[in-house]
Structure formats: C-alpha cells, structure tokens
Length: 401
Image (cartoon, rainbow, N blue to C red):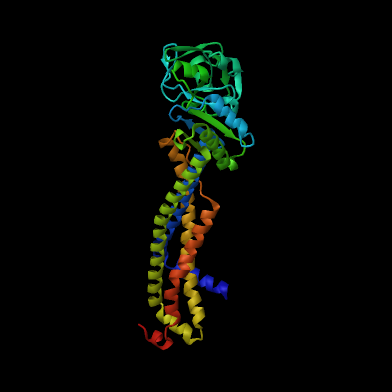
C-alpha cells in the first residue's frame, strides 16, 4: 500500500517536470543557503579557534597600571604566580618594543614583526623550540644584555638561514642574535606577520632602553584551561592585595575571548539561517499552492476513486506523499547544490582572503536538519490541499468539468 502510494506520487510529480521544478525552487535555494551559511559559520569558528590556539587559549594576559604610588614589580607578579602553582605554570613580562623598527643592513622590516622584551622562560611558555643557537638566559636578563632571539621568517628573509652571531638594529640600538626559533607556520609564504615573524630580547633591556621603571604587561600560562576563571580570580586577588584597588590592573584570557567570539558568530549564523529559512517558507507556500491546483485539476479522478471505494485516508495519504516527495526531491537537490557552492567557495575565498584561512565546512547535522525541515514543510503545507481532496463529495466531483 505504502509502496504503491509512493510510486503513484512519483508518477504524478514526474508527469509535470517543469511545474515540479519551479515548485521545488524555493526549497532548493533554502536548503542550499542553510547548508552554506552553517558551513561558513563552522569555517569561521574553526579559523577563530586556530588563531586563538596560536596565541594560546591557556594564556592569561595581565596589565598592571598601579594605583597612586603603589606598583607591582616583576618579582611581585612572580610571587603571585608561585603562590598559585596549582593554577599557574609560568609567567613572564611582555614589554612591547615594536616601535623600534627592525633593520638589517639597509633593509627595514616595518610590517608585522613583533618585538617584545621577555624573560628566559617565555619561548618555552609559547611552545617555541630552538632551531639554532641558544635561548635567552638568566644572565642576559640580570645584566641587561643587548642580545635577542628571532623567528624563522627573519632568519630566512634577512640572513639566508645563518642569523646566529649576526647583529640586528632595533631603532637606534644594535642587538646580537644568539638563537633562532623553529618555524610554527609550515607555509613559508604565510610567515610574514605570523608567530614566525618575531624578535625577543631581555625584558630588562627593553625596559632600560624604553625608559620604563616597571613592567606593565605580563603573560601567564594556566595549567588547566578549564579552570581559567579560578586562575584569573587568583591573580586578581593577589594584585588587589598588593595594590588595594580594582582599577589598578586588568586581566583577560584568550579562552574568554574565544568564547565571546564564538557566541557572536553563532548569533550571526542563527540570524542568517533564519533569513535563509524564509526561502523554505516560500517554497512551502509554493507547494501548497501547486497542490491546490493539482486537487482542482484531478477532481474527477478523485471522484472516480472515491466512487470505487477509496477511503478518505487513502486520498489524504496520496496527496501528502506527493507534497512530501516534491519537497524531499527539492531538499536533495538543495544539498547537492549546497555542497557544490561550498566547494566552489573554498577555491574562491583564498583568492580574496589570502591572509585568513576560512573554509566553508558543511556539517552532517546541518544537512540532516535542512533535509528534515524540507520534508516537514512538504507534509505541513501539503496537508491542507490533501485534506480538501479527501473530503470532496464523490457525486459533486464526478460532475466537475
């Protein structure tokens, strides 16, 4: 019975190919739009996660301004971290020295190179490993030495891979390169401005040359990212005990930023998906309209079937299945089109957004939901015409011309 009903539904749908296609068009566009939009959202979320992973989602950024005459020294911040060893694994000053433009020979590297004054543990905290030479050492910090370690980009671009022992100018100051870090970015063409485009020098040297009496920026690494709130509260408590003011410092974690950005992306995706769903609604109205036309065209057929003993539920099922079949075919075509558009977008996006690795990644769940909604719309909007067909009086239907 069910198979026969479905077979008849396919025959009726296939007998009016152009009308069926035009009826399905709203469903096709709606399903395609939902799949592409959700896929784009997935790609943006993943790109955001990758970006924050590079920064370190287990990192706390600490800014200390002080309050009145009260200030927090580097040693004070070290003590706070040491007091909370179960939450904080390491902490380092991070003195911005980027206003001193790197220069090698006559070539200036103005764009993208990050220059920071840090302690001897910073490279390990940021998961760097040494490719050549040595890292910063305690005596470099203690003696304010003008030495530095550099990333793979400058090593290749400025020194041909042999930077150790060479000098580099930062503004008016000369530094001796003592180490080179291993590359983090595999694509050499994408290294400029990345984590591989960096220079790290002793924070004491950066403070001395910048005429800073105290460090204002620190980076702390949490032992457990899931306990970010506890770690943040512990550092805040330590700084408050020292400075006696909530306005003397500011602490934020990359994981908090990532969560906020994900919430914003999800909200935008929900809004765009809602807009795309309007096309599904229009498709549903189109199905209802065409099914009403079909009922009118087949009034005599319905009358004959009822006169021969067909029950109301049989007629109802016939038209509901036809509507569901039409919307299901539209959903299937929409899925295929959504995948095709996603693949095309993945080839086109890098041409216009070479600095951002965003892909359109359709998820299985979005496909299942979009297809389910398309079938549901067919059933929902096909029920009213089917009910009308099922309730036709067979005598009046046979008289219909």
